[in-house]
Length: 65
Image 1 (cartoon, rainbow, N blue to C red):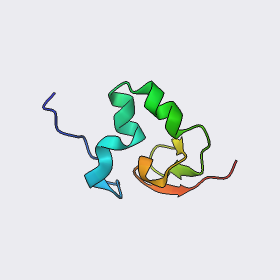
Image 2 (image 1 turned 120 degrees about the vertical axis):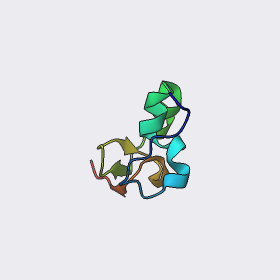
Image 3 (image 1 turned 30 degrees about the vertical axis):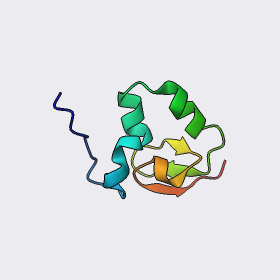
């Protein structure tokens, strides 16, 4: 792998993509992901991941449980 970030073309914040949950999963950062998902308020409209922080996913939208 080249070390380049694989940016989804639907990412609304590509400059911060390497800290999005999809990239954290690729980096096996389970502890960090758990911290970002303990009280979800947002959902990614690309992959469906739920998160506490709008900036932690590529295409955030409101999440209501």
